[in-house]
Structures are given as structure tokens and as C-alpha cells.
Length: 445
Image (cartoon, rainbow, N blue to C red; front, side, top):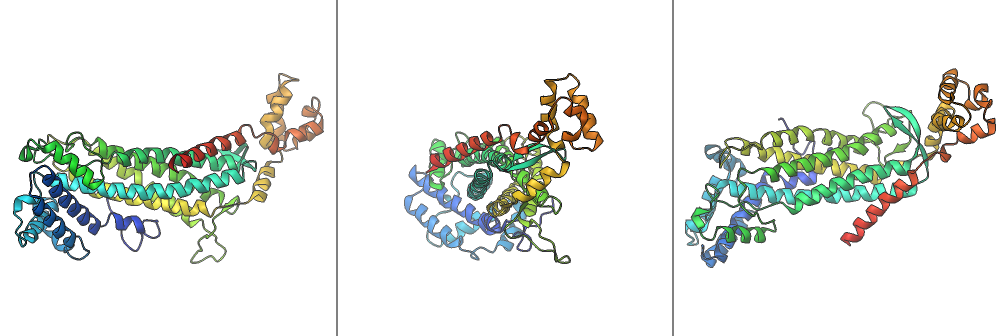
């Protein structure tokens, strides 16, 4: 799959910060951090001498400095073995050997997949934290909009048409509820981002009987979850992460799409605080942050599909399916983080236009409340629906239609046509979501 990762497009799609977290340098740094932590973990259980582990950590610290490892050269060397760990370990061992450290103190009991998977979990954990931070900003903005416009009537739209009145507060509350649920999934997979350590065939035979202890110490050293058992070809963790990112992208894309539609010239019910201009049309006020959030989010499902399609790994080490995950999950993280960032920008500066909402509610001259008139009329005649349907088709105001006023006074019909009087539980919806936001905030305070 072709990507557009790089300094030209990343800022547009909100991914500049996340791109640094999953860059080639970030990958190399995470692998070196894993190797250093592994030597220390092995030293905790007598597999490696403590002094050697300390020296490996120092050498790895030097190599993790930007530019210390020639990534272009490392990438070229990686082709021979099919992954970058092999030449990176060779480089680390050579550097450690200059300080009298034996090769056995570097990469003890590990296989390449242990290092790549653990590094990927480190990167994932860091990016998930960034995604959740942006989602928290979007949730706060959504809650503020919901609170401010709890009772502001707006047309609800179904299948692109005005349906019944709701409130803009309820609309914003719905966005917020979806983001909260997505964040719950992200929190779960963030907490379960696990170390990987199993050695050549997943049995940790090279460090027996200390395999489990070394794995747990490695997890503790890196701040990752403990693994229970090696998961070389059990890719449920990766599938769960990808799925949670896909759900988050969908939850982000929903308000981004709504904002884009509500900001259209004919509707004009919302606008961004810093709309974008057009290169050709001076009058344009484009909701660029929402557009960028949606653009990033719509690219996510295909990547999720790739991860899920690659979950069936053969035997004890996959021949290709594992390799397909590295860049795919990296792009998933980058795109979802960018979408979350852009949505937070859009929602944090979103301006509602109650006047436009009122104007649009009045556009059908009361037909929006035909359901309410039908309900009132049904108390007087069994033909209520057909009467109101015919009245709507006539183009006359409902309070002027004689077939309706034969049963209801015009003043009563006019009262029935007031959008503010037919909002159902819109306000209660806002209150429930605000309670969720408040509980979330108090739970993390």
C-alpha cells in the first residue's frame, strides 16, 4: 500500500508529532532500548553479568543518539536477513566488544521477532497515549458544546433530509459518546501492550530455566505488560490494537463528516475557528481541520483489514505475515493519531450558529413537525396520517389546511409546530453524556 508519509503531507493530516514517534529513528531507538533492557533483565537472573549489562546499556545509549546509526546503511543490510535486528545486534555487539563485553551479553536468549515485536509495542504504547490525549481534547470540546447548546433546537437529519427537531447539544453529545467508547477500547489495548520474549521457537530454551523470569523483568524494565507466554504466532494482540484504532478512526470520522456538512454554505450551522482558504476562490471558508480528520480516518479501515488478514501465522514463525505488520501498524498509528489531532483542533474551535439553525428549522414551514400534528389529530380521527400527508403535499401551511383545522384550532396547530416543544429526551441525552464525561474526569483526577 502506497503511503504519503513525510514532511510534506504529515502536517496537513495532523500526523507531524505522531510521525516522529514512529519514524525510522524511533524504530531504531526502540530496538536499542529493548536490547539494553534485555541485557539488564538477563542480569537480574544471573544469565548475564551485571557489569556487562550496564556496559551494553551505555553503548546502546550512545547508538540511540540521532545519526549514530546510519539508518540507510542499516536498511540495506536488513534485506539479507529479512529484518533490521540482525545487523543492529551485530553493530551493538561490535560496539560493546570494544569495552570487553562478550557477545553473549547482547541479545541473550532472544530472536529477532522478540526485539521487533517489543519495539513495536513500545512505539504503539507511545502513540496510543498521544491519540488518547487528542481524544480527551475532543471530548472536552464536545462536552462544552453539548452543555452550551443543550436546549438549542436544530434540525435532525435522516437520509440527508430534515426529520424532526433535536438540539445541537444532543448532536455534540452523540459525537462525544462515540469518542468516549473509542477511548475505552484504546485504553484497554494500551494497557495490554505486551513484551515479547520467547527465543528461537518460543520456548526460551537458550535461557532455561529463567525464560519466564527474564521476560517479566524485561516487561518491567520497559514499562510494558507482562506476556504470560510468548505470542510469536498468536497475533490477537496486534489484531486488537488494529481494531481499536479502526474503531477510533470511525468515531473520529463521524463528527468530522457532520461538521463538514453542517459548515456548508447552504446550511451554515457551524464553522471552524480557523477555516481554510481556497487557492482560487476568495470567499471560501473551508472546515479544513474536519476535512483533514476525515481524510486520515478513511484511510484506516484498509490497513485494519491488512492486519486482520495477516493474523493467521504459520507454525512457530510466520513466513511473511509477521513482516506485513510492521509498516501497516506504523501507518495505522500515524493516521489515527493525525485524525484525532485534527478533530481536536476542529471541535475545540467550533462555532455554532443558532440563527442559522432556526432559519433551517423554519425552511419547511412547519412540515418538520408533521409527526406531532398527526399524533394530536389522531385523538380526533382515524384518518390523521392520511389527512396530514395530504396537507403536507398541498404546500399550504398546516395551520391553514381546513382538513386539519376541522379538528384542531389554528392556534393549537401553530403551537404544535414550535420545534422547541418537541425535543423529546434531547436534553436528557446531553445530561447523561455530561455525567459520563464528569465521571471519566473524576476517575482520572
